[in-house]
Image 1 (cartoon, rainbow, N blue to C red):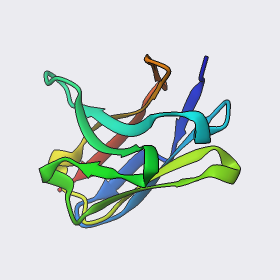
Image 2 (image 1 turned 180 degrees about the vertical axis):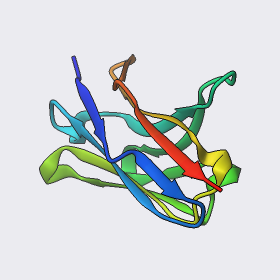
Image 3 (image 1 turned 30 degrees about the horizontal axis):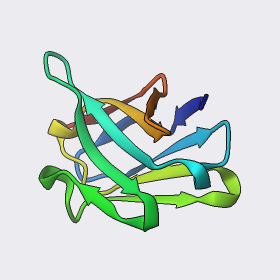
Image 4 (image 1 turned 120 degrees about the vertical axis):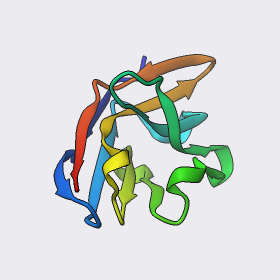
Length: 115
């Protein structure tokens, strides 16, 4: 089992920045994939950024060069640095993890970008 707790969401103006944090209940060193996903009202959940074994990172085209995923193994925490935010980035952001074939989700944190 892996419990995930997100924090760092909030209201920000367009062009601003936020950093989301996802604290895991166990060592993320043993987790195969950790990522950030988002779901806007009326839309499906989509992958924003993911970090795989070996430090390989992937980003949605819409956030490339604006968002950065990183991790701190000593704190069992994954971060999402979001810069140059746009109103279309408004969504609930979820932290997800895959370990031994099982998928775990956090409760989500709201990010609202005003124009």
